Image (cartoon, rainbow, N blue to C red; front, top):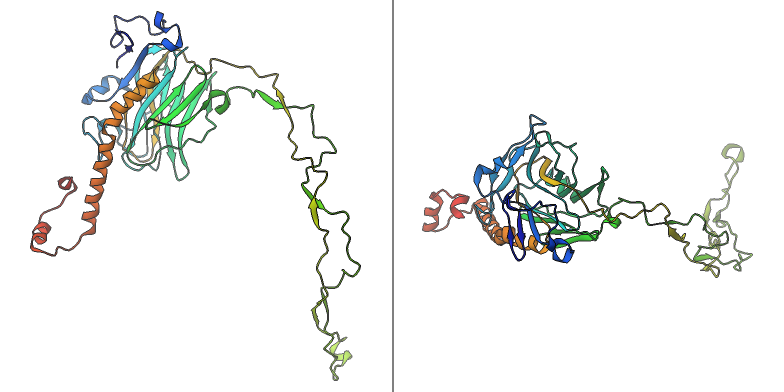
Length: 411
């Protein structure tokens, strides 16, 4: 983890003895346009098992799933693509890392990391949580207070979303937008950007997937506008666009029975009413029958349009310009349940600079993403070739048949 200030100078190292308090504004931070780029947290798991010195396994449960460092079944670069990988199916996982506390007041907050479902996930979360400084990492669990929850969450056929949940006054608010996550088994970059002007962006693979305003897309506050209770729909308001023509009258000869006795059938001569009952001719469709009469439909000359009750300012609405703000952000954690394991988490970054995060994403994830796709395509070709099990036809093919073919050899 490094605390880096990128501007006209470089400040400090990990928990730096040479840096000022991360929450103390420097002269260059007085205006948002001149905020010094800060890298509050960065993790790429590039030192094998040393990650265990930085990340703490929760002991809240005795049966938490175990993590390992892995790069998956295919990758762009075996070393660079190594990340924190879940290893046990149908398990809860809880692990976290601490960094120097910071406040995002007056600054943009960017949270970014990569997720790879090495097995096609059936049901499981792959989101991260940001916690305040006072969390006990040893007992972190699903009930631990957090500030932000962000990342993909999949369960079954229909739940394939990016969770974006904020803590506001100790209540949790989920986004009203339906943000779809990636579900394949490639590595994807997830980025959440929250700005002091209360706008936000969710990016996947460095492309904006959703954006908007915190007030609009979360129910933190009461609505700015409400329906005017003193303005009900007028009694004479006519919303009928079409009506029956009041001038249209039913013809006098319209009412005819639907079925009539068959005039071509006469009572049989041997019909005995004492024995056979009263005779009646069979019924047939009446050719003069015109159906049920209805007046024709015309446009309503008194149509007023659809009634919309007017809105007025909500007297109970109170704006809050600090919706975006959190104090003493200090821990990032994975507190998740996974049905099918193998998910790889990597390339964590927390910063206050959008452009820096985008460039870092391209450096950490983008550098190997295309190679990962190419390697996967080659692997699929090999699997298809093996699974086809074609009979060799020539001499060389017969020699090839004797050689044991493996995916590793082919790749």
